Image (tube, rainbow, N blue to C red):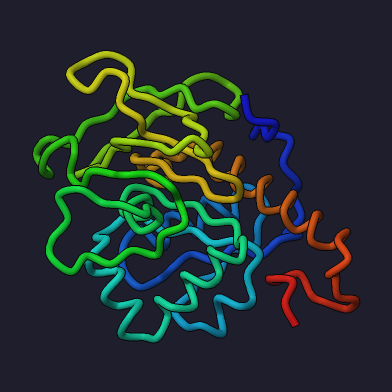
Length: 233
């Protein structure tokens, strides 16, 4: 079980800044969930805004549209660089696809940010009419199963050795399918916790961001006088 157990003990102070990629998708819902667990939540649409955050959420939505808009706004390259440099990043549904290194059933020209050493299958559970809800035990999230909403969701077809599987579907035709993973500072879920009012997955991620920021601050590369966002000069 991962060492980061998200629960109601999160801080009430906005000591970290977490951005939400705000090009398309469930932006408002993620901003609200992050604020509810004590983060300073900000939309990210430009490279300069990305440079000011301690962590990033890639929301549910339409992965192809988000990738195309990110490229149009000059954000795709900086996003790839930031993830590669270790920026804690959480992707839900389409965000999982954007973080994946490999995508099955993708349209021609599908681009991703990458960084997560997994193969995901787009629309794995079916089309919009096949959307469903289920209880999913997520390793590291205390308090029982997470109420998971799956909307045209992907699943993880294959996870590399360095990827920790933290959630699977239990029961039904998709029994055992991987729907939540973590690799270092990257977390991804097939489902949409931002739509349920259950903020425990967001709390898990914000604790990860806090831990990463504390490590940065205590490292030899720490920069005196840096503000709360991003730890960058």
